[in-house]
Length: 110
Image (tube, rainbow, N blue to C red; front, side, top):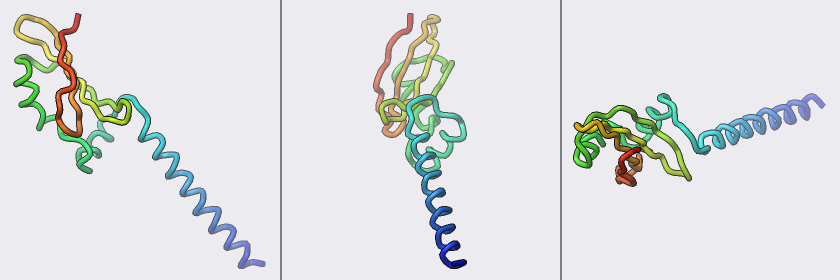
């Protein structure tokens, strides 16, 4: 009887651990803003490119000063959203695929 109880307890613990892992996986797959810790982990794991590596591409696309950067997950893709202020005071928005470095969008904001 005691052995059966221990086996049931082990199954319950292992099952609960798997459920927790699945729940965490779901959280990581949600679209939305990515925090600093998660961004660093994604760079370390090689999932996304570091922003520093993309700065040359950003400068080639448009001269100016970067004023804001966000990392988001949209439709299963990690995307850097970069706002840049040019020499005439115009703000530009860029969207860059964080995994490949591909420029997805470059447009002037209103």
